[in-house]
Image (cartoon, rainbow, N blue to C red; front, side, top):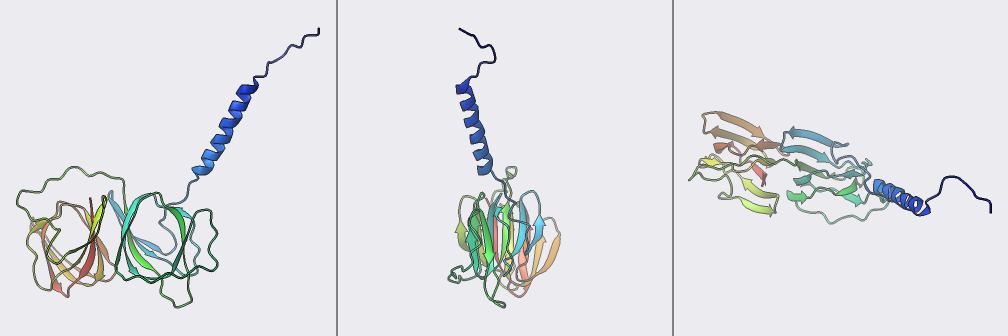
Length: 246
């Protein structure tokens, strides 16, 4: 019998390697990366630090935004209703989307990270376009904080309505009464104030500093935890949705 010399082929090993290669290809497809939701057309960065990034978001009729993935938990406030079609990452842009029922504003909002979709505004020229202030909640854990015993917390407070509460944030709807200083209090949590109605606020810090700020519709500001102050509306009665980060 003639013997054949050469390299022995291990067929089970080749089959195994082929299966791993196929699985790896599928894994790469499943792990496809998408850009973060912001920035994109119609957005403006208002503030950024290690805790949050605050965005003004306008959904522009006629714009075709990319499919994106929200890399952070997000809290915010819708300030104006406009029609928006939301589709999944593999779905085409809707050519004849179904109109939604308008919602009242301001509308508090929260969304967990990991959502992947496309948001496309639609309507006729001159139709209202959706507007919101959205806050990316970064993956940052601040050091422990203990307020001084007996110090009043910033929230809850008289006149503040709890409009959204979950494991990540609590949102309050509050209107500062005109020319009525609030009692001295401590902000136990980092927070973002999203203004719905304007006016002028004076903030008197416990360390003697004083800040006067005139705010308008869709303005937003960050208030750090640990700040001790007295607040007074000296012109008008500003109204805001305050997002406290837990």
